[in-house]
Image (cartoon, rainbow, N blue to C red; front, side, top):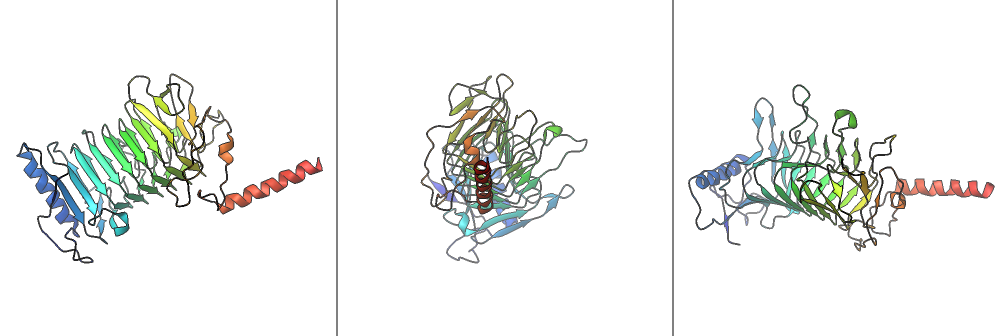
Length: 382
C-alpha cells in the first residue's frame, strides 16, 4: 500500500523529535479539512495514496464542548470521495505511546467517508458517546484502541430515544467496522459500550470490562452492557474476546435483536435478510451482571438472541479463559451451548483459579469456598 504522510504544518514532536506529527488538535482538523476540500474537486484517477495523520506520542487533546457551543471532536464527514485515511499514535500506531482524546461531547464524528483507520488511539471521558459512525457506507477499522470512562445517557427533548442508541464508546448505522485488539473499560451508556443499527461489526481479541448498560424494559429498549445490536441487517462476528465485570439493566452482556437461529451452534441468521451473526469463537464471559426477570427471560454471562419468530436463546461463550490474557492457552470448550433464557448452566458458576490463566476474582473464590463448606456441613448433618 502506497501511503502519503500528511502534515500541512510540519512539526517535530516535543517528546520525540524523530517523529513529525500533530500535538495541536486544530492543526490536525485543518489538515483533515484540507484533504476533504481537495477531494471534493478531484475525481482521483488513478486512486489517491492513503493519507496518514500521525499524532505525537504522549499527546493528550483535551476537548471541550456543550450543546450550545458545539464540540471540538474530530470530524470526518460528508465527502464520499475522500481517499483512504489513517489516524495513528506515533509511527507504529501503538496505544502504549499514549495518544489520548479526552473530554468533550464526542471525540470523532464519521459520516460517508469511505475507508478510515484508527491505530493506537485512546478515547476517554466523552459525555455523549465517543465515536459516532453515521449513515454513510463507512468502512472503518480500529486497531489497538482503548475506550475508557465514556458516558452517554442523554435523552432528547420530549423523551425521544437517542438516534445512536446512547452507546458510550462506539455507535453506528449502516456501515462496517473492524475492531481488533481493542479495550472497552468502564464505559456507561443506555445501550452499553457499543451499539449497532444496521452495522456490520467484526470484533477480534477485544476486552470488555466494567461497562454498564442502563436502558431497562421500562424504557422500552432493554439493552446490554457491552454490545447491543438492533435492525435486521446488523451483523456481528465475534471471536477471541473477553467480557468480565460488566453490568446491564437489560437482558445480557451482548444482545442481538430481531434474529432467528439457523440450526447451528455457531451462527445465527436473520429471518428476513441474508446477514448473519457469527458468535462464540473462543469468547470468554465471567462475573457479568444482568437484570432479573420473573419470566426467566434474561441471560447471565452469555449472548442474548431475541427473535419474534422463534424462542429467545442464550448463547454461551466457548472459551475456558480469556484469550488475550498472558497465561491463557486459548483453550476452546468442545462446543458452544444454547439454552433457554433463565436456565442454569454449569458454566455460569465456573470459577477460575490464579493458576488457570483466566481473570481471577478472589472475593468470588472465597464466597464459593465458603458456600462449599456450608453445603458440606449440611450434607454431613443430614
